[in-house]
Amino acid sequence: MTAAPETASRRGPRTPSHAPSRADGAAALVGCLDGAAVAVAAALVGLPGLLALAYGLVAVCVLAADGSYRPRITTFVGLRVPRLVAAVTLPLPLLVLAGAGRGAPWVPVAAVAVAAVLLPLERAGVGAAQRHRRRRVGGEPTLVVGAGPTARALTATMRARPELGLDPVGVLDDDGPQTDPHDGAILRGGVGELPGLVRRLGVRRVIVCPTAAEEPGCPGVAGPPSPGVLEEGLLGAREAGARVWVVPRFPSAGLDVPHGHLDDLWGTTLVPLRPVRGDTAVGARLHRAGELLLASALLVLTGPWVLLAAVLGGPGRLAGPGPAFYRQWRVGRAGAAVRVVKLRTVAGGGDDGWVVPAHRVTAWGRLLRRTHVDELPQLLGVLRGDLALVGPRPERPAYAAVFARTVPGYLHRLRARAGLTGWAQVHGLCGDTPLDDRARFDRQYVEYRSTWLDTVILLRTLAALPAAPARGAAVAPDTPGGRS
Image 1 (cartoon, rainbow, N blue to C red):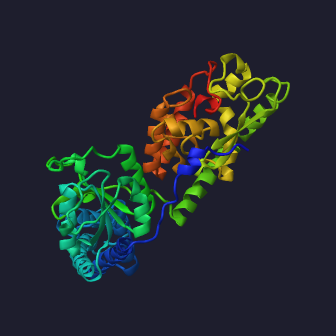
Image 2: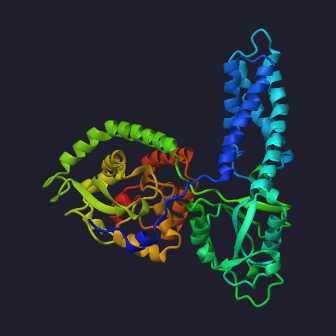
Image 3: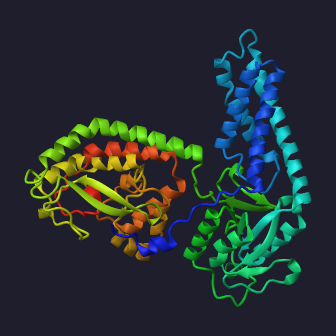
């Protein structure tokens, strides 16, 4: 077995830390209180007990889908009242369908009206309790990236206002002025040290400000840190379990982002970054169960065609000399080696080159490639758990090691399980196409992957099958059928 590339194993994706912070525990508590407030409001107007509880649960699910329970710095409720009202209003048709208004048609409407008042009041009380607790217990350890005037001002604000829940433990800047000790900040080191400091100091919050080199009033600095270094540092901080907020580079230009998705630090707008996606145990099991069900159904439907193709393309038959199946080791999630199996389409077996000459692809192989039957044996890899139905296409170790050094962001694709089809492939980036583009789409998939995105990719893959061109020309062997 060929070893995974050294670069991938050295840098490889780290396992996200999911140690709960105080804010994470508070979010769960707020969800319970929201559900209780909505259920009590419904019960006050005569909604049956079980139906009132169900109403509260649905409202909490709507709020969770809207991102209402993400950790926030500001606890001000006023600007979020419209979203709270919308969350308790959306389930109204369900209440009507459930018969909540039998004999009293006004009951569902009254339940929504009372909940629309009680829920914001409950949130206001929770916010007051959070501010009181932050003053009494202290804030969570916070690192500030950037040593310019904005960073110094925000650090001073954090120390002066404990109700924000932030305890600045240091400032990072690759080339900034020494911080005035009177403002309470500690210069900890460069941006590249961010992941290590997050783990060592137990940091739960990271605020990214313009660096000293990016702001006026900081003479004598060489320049801002490399974007790649900063990006890697922020990824490492997120994987270590820290939440990251970014100060917009143009503070006087309003962001066209719903206010409910922004945060605020005493008048300074902050844009939160998504946490590194880590499946919960329940979510991972549900996703895996759905994947197994779909892969099994596809195998049942296509299995006879695969068996027929294997018999016809066996040794000495339509595919020429060589075995019916072609096996290769590829690099999967976290640099682990996975075995890919497909029907052989090239005369004489595999090829170590990047491109297979057109004359090596047999007539039988061209038929398999056109119908995509050569890909179907990989469904067995999905059942084994080596592959996913959707994910970045796996690469051979030798090429992965080269691409890790030469293609920016290439290794980010190793944060997800390799798949049969992916976000890059449905955009036509397969075969001998620009690797930079493929890596960019793979990185976007890894950051934003979800069940719905997987569904969209699968549907687009199926829709593209009838229009797939004949592939008699030279193709890359490491991209099965030129569709990797």
